[in-house]
Image (cartoon, rainbow, N blue to C red; front, side, top):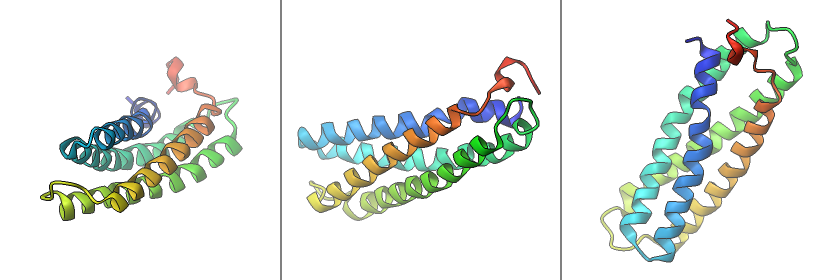
Length: 148
C-alpha cells in the first residue's frame, strides 16, 4: 500500500470524526449529560491525533500523485494549503478539548463558556474539513485504479 492509497483511506477520519464528536457534544449539552459531553471532548482529542498521519500521508502522497498524467498541480497545492490551515484548527480544537477535560473533568458540569468555545471551534473545523475534502476531490485519483 503506497502513501497515496493510505491517504485516501484515512482522510475521512477527521471529517467524519469531527462531525460525530460534534453531534455527541450537542446531544450531551441538550440532554445536560456531562459524561456525554466529556466523551465528545475525548473524541475531539482522537480526531486531533488521527489528523496528524492524515496530513503526513498527504505530503507523501503528493510525491507519488503529481507524476500521474492528468493531475493538476494547482489542485494539489490548493488542497495542501487548505490542509495545513485545517490541521492547525483541528489541533487547536483537540488541545482545547484535552485541556478542558483535564481542567473540568472532575466537575459535575462543564462551564458553558468552555462548551461554547468548543462548539465554535468544532463548527470552524467542520467547515474547514469540508473545504479541504472538496479541494482534495478535485485531484485526479488514478492511484485508486491500481496505479503506483
